[in-house]
Image (cartoon, rainbow, N blue to C red; front, side):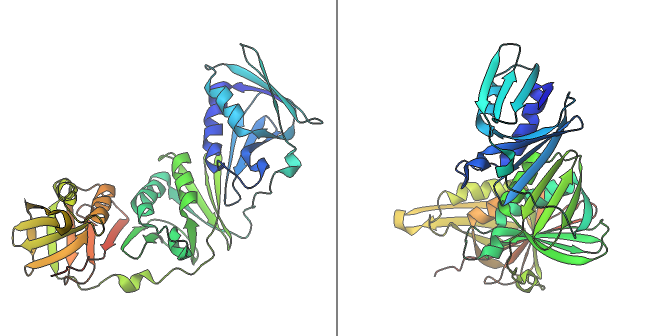
Length: 371
């Protein structure tokens, strides 16, 4: 098999596919791209058995064939070449590969395409279509709240709920929870599934915001297709906790303040907090918020005051500063609202400005204050 293509165009596609290649794979063949040439199109496939990426590029050829190509050496070669046409040829019998550029020839050993794992096919799927910007927003807003605890397998991924004209993305690690909803989709059914964190990370890297994303799913896999690329994720087979049960409904106390000022103040105060709990204390009165922290072990303490709008009874409540800083970092509105009920119940953080069809809710559990 033989084809010609721009070195830069091929490199761009290989860099997308390279996301699914793990540094130390369980099988040597997983260090390869599968090249599948047919009808002037080169299909490039990579997988780590959990997540697979399939992308394609138009090439000049009148041949077809398949070969597995070592990813690292080919990527390094193309990165070191300036933009130019290259010719790729492979000997199907010996799996030998030769790349020809204006500078010379590069020979490398390929592998048999028959050893490359089968990629799941999208059969018996339901499908919804989402704007790329919505998928980007969802991933950016919720991914940080997933758990790293393998004993709580469901919580290591993102829970996706399709509910007729709405899709909901939820992530939680039991200390914080983020729920992002988008309400302008068409679906004939309701269903839910859990996508691993790694799969969404790869999707985020490969996806441009202006692409339209077709999200198909069945019992075992989710298939995200956009432009010439498809990301296939094996779903997490576990039951997601009832997240609605932990979201407090009645939160009569409403604190409104500038997001950036709040975040910057927390970053400074957190330097003085106990390194185990990261606890900061919010003392909230009408028109004034005092943020303080202390680390008794080292006699460190800090206090700052911010102006705010507050509707409710005066309250003192403790939170993990790290969690609040992360949450404020993924919000984009100028002002945020903090809904509170009592010092021992979760606080709800909301953006003041909402995009059309979008809803975002962040929940953070308080840190119990020691007297």
